Amino acid sequence: MTEFLQRLRDQLGAAGLLEGSDLAAYENDWRKRYIGRALAVARPASTDEVAAVMRLCHEHRVAVVPQGGNTGLVGGSTPDDSGRQLVLSLTRMKRVRAVDVFNASLTAEAGCVLAEVQAAAAQAGMLFPLSLAAEGSCTLGGNLATNAGGTQVLRYGNARELCLGLEVVTASGEVWHGLSGLRKDNTGYDLRDLFIGSEGTLGIITAATLKLYPQPKDRLTALAACVSLEDAVSLLGLARQRAGDALTGFEVMNRASLALVARELPQLAQPLAAADWTVLLELSDAESAEHARGVFEGLLEAAFERGAVQDAAIAQNLQQAKSFWHLRESIPLAQAQAGLNIKHDISLPVSAIPGFVAEMDATLAAYLPGIDVIDFGHLGDGNLHYNVQAPRGVAPAGFLAAHEAAINEKVYDAVQRRGGSISAEHGIGRLKRDELAARKDPTALALMRSIKRALDPLELLNPGRLV
Image (cartoon, rainbow, N blue to C red; front, side):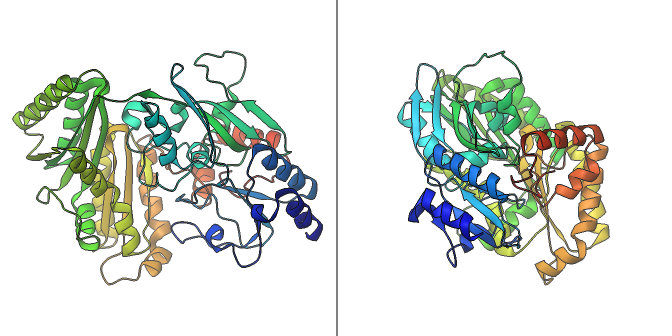
């Protein structure tokens, strides 16, 4: 590897290659479940440098682990412990290359932090709607590589729906210049969709052209207390009927999830009394603030009349709205402070969610009395984070070692019976690779593996992840 590393140094310079003892931040995942050992960390500053790195890796048969903000939850961007995998960090590639207001598009490099992309759009008077709890540190390339979802999928779709074109470096170091701002281009296979969601196993996303939207004239945010999950689903149906596309967010949190936040983060105010289920809903309207407020007030009035809502708190200003969202987004942080837990990022038809939750809550309570089910997520698009915390007084690491496999099997079997998915927005990575192999349709798996062999025959790109 001596010659390979020297050629990397020559290509990237001192700022572009990290070696030795400076690699810990790149070798551990956010959840501290995976701890690897990298050969080195390459930090290219341009697409040409990424291509040069990949050509060297192709020549020397060195495996590459692409990495953005390293905020993933499935171990997809952490090197293994062999000391032979090169981490390819895109964080120096952070230019917003262009904003085209008339085409409602923005082109940015893969290392741009998501919040910086949002800010660049806002500066131009536009909205880039992808939003998630890690937006202050996750990067655009990682968002696209995992097809990130977040809090506004209900209105705007996943990262895939927000991307018009890509620039990608292949496993052999070629560059696909696909940064089109076109909404229509019917000239063959859609290569863009191939790379989005591929978790760095097919190519390295170096830049993207994204869709922008008008800034809303008003945002209206509320917390609503529901007696049952069926009531929350009923409220969702009513909100869709009354608000249509103005409904941009619809989150749900069970009693245990907010109790965990109260315990671990007591400084955060909780406006409503504890309820079995709390909904966070948001409407936004690009036409008229008055129209949005009228719809919002009528929706809540109808929800109270039908008994779907028992109590509600309406944000009176932007700061209050942010505090409501902060409460919801603090659940993962509270879990991290409480210790390792068994995470499930699942999706189901919305109509199947109450039955799934009732079955699984009972099943897990019988399996291991005292466990906490921390159930929250994006009810509007059918995505639940159905997480399981160790009983009080039980060491989290020991709990995972003893029970994770059995609990996963119970949860995923129930999801599969209802036509759901074991991964909604976090991806597969290393954590769910074996589950995917066991549960995915065999024909689909064969097609995926054929694509992998065609684009990465030497298996240099993120080996051991996804497929």
